[in-house]
Length: 279
Length: 303
Image (cartoon, rainbow over all chains, first blue to last red; front, top):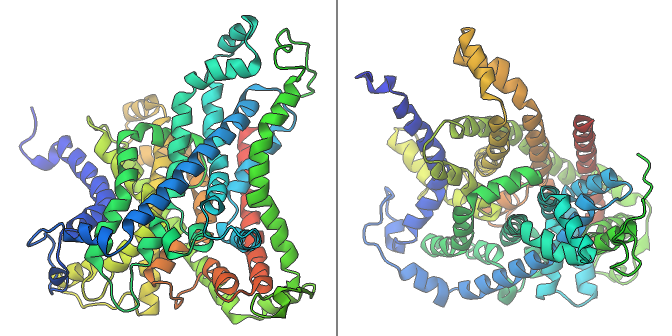
């Protein structure tokens, strides 16, 4: 029989615990969502309002008409998709070698991978900036795609290695005995079986690129080439903060990533912990 | 382990490529990309740090070799020491902060919920939010006029605080934002660690009459220690690179400047590549030492 005192009931505490984690994680995003439906006038009211008094979608319209959010969004998609494809392809090759083939100095290679992933990005921007200037690539997509792809190679490779190791070697050997080449076996047996791993690595690489700020700010600074993080940061004026507009822009920028992690949360969590690289 | 490749029956198919040669070629693309974007820049950085090179004058075209003069200059540069000190303060506050909050979140998230997704999403959302967006959002939360933080303080009967324009308060606002943003990643790492602790340990402890508090100190914490250490080192390395959040919270200003912000201002804004590179080399060296400690720890744990 359950006690009449609600605080003696363990289910109440489960709800409290879940509530703390959920509110902590969702509060800023929910606050931004509410603000994105407020008018500028309502925002300047004191005391501030929590719930929009007269909800409007005007800020979303403004984001696309008065600010080039559409353009920023396009830039972010081009860079993130390009970087993800390149990164995962290159990492899959490396991960296969590391997981499956006899190779001297494997430990050293893993150490190098982890070591490189810890390089401070800001120490890379000076030489990358110089190189990009010298090659005349400033404000081109390729100038950002290559570094973004490279920066996710360590995490993508580590995730893929752990997936490749989970595929029984016998399957591959059987295919090779049946006349498949090693690359043929890789393509026909290992890649389909490792698809979840490839997918996880892709999500991590995509989110890394979508979120990256410092390189984007340095290598693609012109108004037309800004990615969402850079573009939205510069919606802050010198003295004015158009928060309803910024909020709408933030929601637009967050929707793709939020959808991806909501749908594939178990993969993402698994990838983050098995990849074990900084986030 | 000595490696002697025995003849394999399937070597024929892919030309005459031996296993080791195939492995080599598979690693080449990743190595090239990392070499071009990470290793070459570091070498180039060290080289440039030995020159006087400003894009704003003649040295932009003809760099002048000055040996270690840039480093000598850095050691007597107050702005370098201030930004280094600020960065170390950020590390000292936000690493323990994120570990404590992260541990709390992980313990809560590890409870036996019937529906897990809202809690998991609550941990993933802050992780997936770009740092610069977290900075923007908290810039506004801490706004003295329209911010929700002051709104709550005043509803509770407190005074309006000028978070962004008072240097000390700005520091704490920055730390708060960093802890919020990074604690969920810590929680995800620790949650994975919690989930592999065998349930039987708690059951037998309970049979022996241990309280929940004792189980936490005697079972959970010791067994979680490896995960806590990994999270602590990741956090230290990323906290040392803090840039986005203070940059966004100050709208590009530098009243509160971290080392990463100073490096960027000196090299990209002032176009002083030589001196900026020297600052970056110093930052790289400090970060490198922490990474070596980490790699040694990880390898030690493997043995």
